[in-house]
Image (tube, helix red, strand yellow):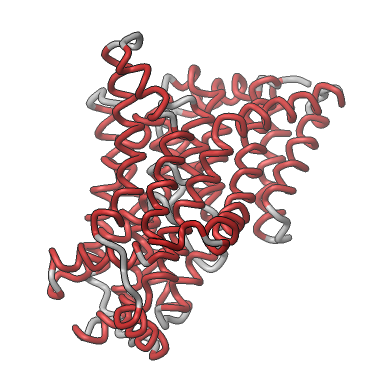
Length: 442
């Protein structure tokens, strides 16, 4: 097929993918598989070549990050069930005080958003946040939004959460670098978003049932120690980053080799999971912990693993079909600044499908073959994708509805709070990426 025909087929495939997910409610995994197969046929690839491309792309991607996604989901599950998430929130609140509680909520949520899904952070901490809002006379439009946005920002930017992890793998970004710069870009986004949230004037009262739940949590549940609560989150990140730094100094040194093992994402996350078992006290050897929680972690990780693998298959197909070459030439003639391309793609996917994870992965899959033509570093493209994938949460997103409903807001209030805040977080993140790229840092 000629160059123009390949581009048209690609654009039609992306439009169909969006329609199938957002309008027809087809599962993302099935949608991507159908689109990849259809795109291969449309551009004239042989059936055998299509199958081998999909299998190869899927296997390569899953082989590198599938177990890591599983362990990350399992770690998040343990933090939820043991009360470590509540302990972390209480510790940050003790530092900031009730007067600056909104900052405590946003920061503790951002910490928890690295290993735990943003929706889960909201569900676990909403009783505590609701009680706090009642005590200080604050609106849930502020507190509920801050609770979601903190976790949402880091979940979009910082591996080992599924979206950033997949995006980094697809683009070939060193995981230590992805974690470090993801955290750096998250900081101004959390600050800018929280400043906006403080200006929200909507008065929304907390739900009464959450007040009762919070009293049960704080009165009857023995929370784990502060050090042990933080350790399963911090330890894997530190190990991964040490391995990355040592490799930049001397790849052959014995110490580097040691940290290449313990700092490998799979091993580092496994260490984090093992350490998290100490949060359970004597319950670590019970069926509830060893079987039930592991099974629930498997269930949580299944969809991200499959979608990530299929996203990798899409990236390989795009590369083999030379779609990227044609798109790079077209974009070069359009005059659009290169760094805006992954940002816009990811923003559109998230806005239309309601999935920031899918936004990061799709943006990365489409951008990866374009890197050479656009003159972008993989790290800059990754951060641009992760920034764009934050824009714009609304009525097609489960995270939006979880936050709005549990915060006692209606749709209009949710759009004015959560919706606008996600746009600000994405723009603040991207502004930071633009500055870092201009300085030549990334």
